[in-house]
Image (tube, rainbow, N blue to C red; front, side, top):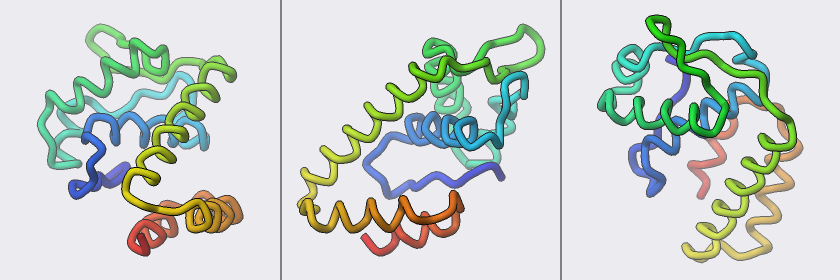
Length: 133
């Protein structure tokens, strides 16, 4: 399995898929020219509807992150660094706004940011952190 989906999250599953794939690209686990799993394979692995994965892939293609290749699937495109950074900043702003909406104060948020920023990019550590909330 490539990553996990949080079915208890208020973030739609297709958006979680998009963000997880972007993170894999950002960290270099997926490189330009790599194919992502087929829609059906990823849907089966994540136990989600194929239309959910298809929507995530379509949106990533519209954003220029993935490129559809007829008969082959979707491959990771060479990304424009500035556009990718801008997209991540927008996602960060959305996340901060959600934290504010659910009552997470600035002190707690800053503490979490400092803790996350000091860690390695390790999915299991991030999941543990999520359980603290």
